[in-house]
Image (cartoon, rainbow over all chains, first blue to last red; front, side, top):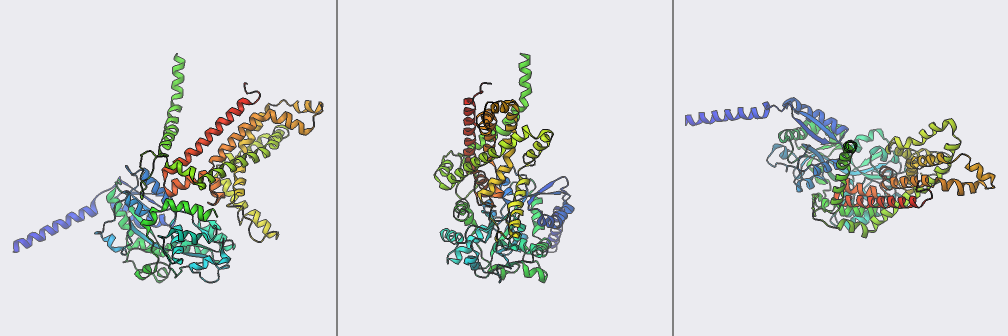
Amino acid sequence: MFGSRTFIRATLAAGAVIAAGAAGAQDYSGKTLVVGTWGGDIERLLKEHAAKPLEEKTGAKVEFLLGGSGDRMSKLYAERQNPTMDVTFQNIYEAPQLLADGLVVPPDPDSQMYKDVWDGMNEGCYAMSLVGLGIAYSKELVSEPPEWADMWKPEYKGMIGMAPYPSSEGDGLLGVAARLEGTDEHDPDAAFAKVSELGAPALVYTSLDEVFALMEAGEVAMAPMISGYVLAGLKEFPGIGFSFPTDPGPVLIRDMVCQVAKSPNPELAEMFIEYALSPETQKAYAEEIYFGPTNSTVELSEAAAADTINSPEEVASLLQLDWPWLIEQRSDWTERWNKEILAQ
Amino acid sequence: MLAAKSARGLVAPAVILTAGVFLAPFLLLLAMSLWSQPPGSLMLDVTPTGENYRRITTDAYYMGGLARTIWLSLATTAICAVLSLPLAWWIVRRAGRFRGLILAVVLIPMVCGALLPTLGIVNLIGPLGVLNGTLKSLGLIERSWKLLGTQAGILIGLVHAFLPLMVLPLVASMDRLPRDAEGAAMSLGARRRAVWTRIILPLCAPGLLAGSALVFCATLTAFVTPLILGQGKIPTFATMAYQQASLVLDWPFASALAVVMLAILAAIGALGWAVRQALPGAAR
């Protein structure tokens, strides 16, 4: 009895030493982890909260590849046999497709980082941040924070700004339009007919400044936009408001972080994702750029909590779309969007 | 023999480079236009199929896009020709010592890439641009005059971008005209109009033809200008191919769109060559 207890203790101690060695002391100097993400604030926050501690801990170097998520999708498919990226940040409308085509490592349900993320949010990849598709509006033209249905008022016909399609914003608008018609996104005829009633978009925006300038000038009344960036940008544009509608609620949109399949540095990639999903990084995302944390253990200041999606109730109040199904419609819907919405 | 061998050696780097960076990707483009994607996946199915071409030729949207692209190219070519003839004449006959400076100014849109001039035009004709701002402050209009997101806006950008391609060949051919041809014709009783239609234009036809072919082909494949000035609302073949390649990630379909565009370029090239052969003085 005594002997076996000693043995267990000794084994545990030895195990702990081995584990600590594996986690802490392994030297990755000379290795370079390549992370694909968006430039600007996101790059800055990831550099500060994920790349820097990872470099300090492992001796590896982290290199950022900046650009749009569509460029990264192209790169992943082109380099599918021999990828050069280790970690990539994608939109929710891209991540499940990457998993289905075997280009990313499926999230590990047994890992702590998986369990820390709100239930049901890891689709295809790990969920990195939560934002909502709401309505940015010109305070001069729209007196009250608008509901979705207000975009269809006759006085705003042809004065709605839209993002290029395909995009989360475009699919979100179609999902909302279908619900206003009493159905959902699985009924594309209803969705497209309803969106086309808005008239051709006043502007197909590619930057926030573009749409905000036109809103302040009274040329664009409203635009479905994603909360994070807009809320961060509103400080400079006093004439513009942002509304989280209630009927239906804002569309839940997620940025995802993915480990590339067959990547050159899988261990480093996993460690980077752990840092990205850590409460510190997620808190910085929320406090600085209003991207809601996916990590359920994060605690936010009151101000940040008010402007971000950060509780299970808030998540539940958001409109969730069937993204894996939407992705399959991409090609058909792009054609329909071109013909029925843009070519009016 | 030795000379032939060393000549081959000298062209080898260019041949290898062309084969590697142009011919091989071009063959891949041709092959990919016959591939497809399995339903629900973005991977490539390499079983040959004509489906992409069937989709282009049977869908009014794509044929409409093709017609619009060709129409924009024709209109740009015509406007460039009308603007360039007097400009080139003036440069050759009247600019004198400012000729170099004026040619440099004409060349600016060519050397600074498509993006900067196009963004400049956005600032001129956009809803909050110089033109609308002036008209609004003069009280002539209340809401902005829409030029961005229209064919007119795209035409302005395309003409601005490709005018040098018409001016330069015209200047080259007008330079070769004998200085006294104009005077000789007038001394024989030709009026100014007849001098232009019967002397200058026929003698400049090769330059006009070369300029037209250059402008037409450049416009047909122009991407940045229609994308930015069309605001995503005026699809041309190049912006459609971009949408399919970069946003939908349907590379086979994007390849088929590109192949159709290249086929039109080849046809225009052949037509230009045939017309050039038929022109007087072609044998020279």
